[in-house]
Length: 433
Image (cartoon, rainbow, N blue to C red; front, side, top):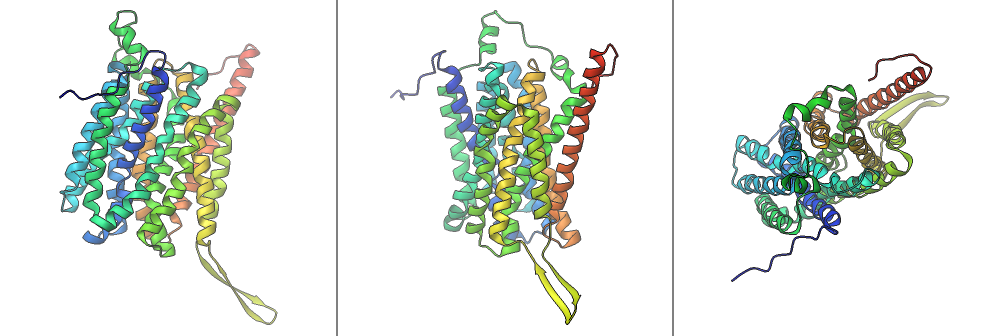
């Protein structure tokens, strides 16, 4: 019997089809990539892990997904996103399936490395989707693609109930099956990007060498964009992984409730990424980043304030005060933070095809790698800070320092470029960044 598979899209419909299917595939991949945000809580209880060990476990998939982004981005430039995307999903599915049979902490860390391959799909999707759209629409297209971050919310909504009903192993098995199905659907409903088609027809220049692909990395500007993404994306991933544990520890919520609240943070930080792309096309990515860093600095400063008791000497004797951020206020501020992070993520990637149109895969891969490393490093840092300080809100203190640094670096870099442009217009020469 021959299966009736979906037909490949026509060339007129190819851009829309590539964007839609890439976004859905990225949603599935992101759900898998953040699987430990839920099952990690149960594994922590089962194995008696401390906060640092828990942070390492939830961060390990992020490490793999970050490190492979640069390579996958270059492979996408050379071989096409349709092939690389499908292969990435299948490889991650194998690792996720094997995770269900891990019994020791070491085995889980090894499986987590393979699960992290799902996170590398972002670099593939950026390089693949951007080739279907002109420069004036790339910000919007990549913003829509980035909505796939909502996969973190999918995990937080669904995984707790599966875990409570059938155990954490069932979550891994179901997520692995979803990857296999998605890989098949993606392969049979998408087409190669225009550059790959022209290259095969002999109408385009052959693929550039690896040295040519990575040539832009000598520019400090690339690494500045990467640091912005370390906060906008890395901190988003870190908080997606950390919030359920934080809510359980600080407010005493159950895992299902904590997962739902964590999803309330993840959804605006994902869906509104598309709006960030539209804003970047309309008012400029630089303006969007200014707003992102300014509001995020205020939000992280507020969330960094720990619960405290104060006693002052009043006229009639000591007066005691108690301060704490209640759960409703915390959730509200966290959602605001997530919203502006979503705008910032889109704004960072709006720069890449504009500045480096021939190296979107390589530059986007490096920026994504550094951002993803934030998702790996920060959960470990959060756990270590908890162990060292005993203060739950220390994670937001760290995020405040990072976003304040982003704001300062961006501002002074822009002022330097403006002075250089003014000097050049006056006949003087300044070294470009």
